[in-house]
Amino acid sequence: MSDLTLFTHDYRSTMWHKLNQQQPIVAIFVSHSVDASSQQMLRTLEAQQAQFRQLQAQPVILTKTNPAHLNAFIQHFQPIYPVLSDPNGDVFRSYSFASEQLELQGGILVLPPRSITAVFRFVPQNDEQQLPINELLACVKMLNYYNSSVTA
Image (cartoon, rainbow, N blue to C red):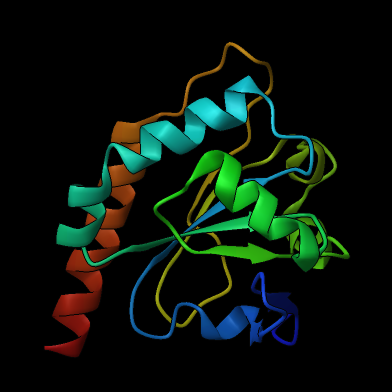
């Protein structure tokens, strides 16, 4: 899983495992058909930007689309977080389990620094299920505390 490649809108590549070398990553998975619940999830997370900054966590949006289509996504949603393309869906599939449909529905994972193992996972099971933002922030806070105590 460590050699999975993601792309920016201008086709610059980055390796999945290098995103979280210094800080926790809040990976926001958005399927290629962005629906109302995905939009709500993005806006909920964006409203927490000050918290993420304080906790030294970096949200990143991953889309299962071609890099050429990222400009349209960025113009339409105007996200405040970096947006990366996973055109073959490799990263999506790596974190999808049989019972969860991350690849189809999108969702959120939190990854600790220097790890590809998710310590928080949210994949909505229906359109009404709301993101447990307090649980997500508590997880990031715990990672921040743990990371600072280990590196101190």
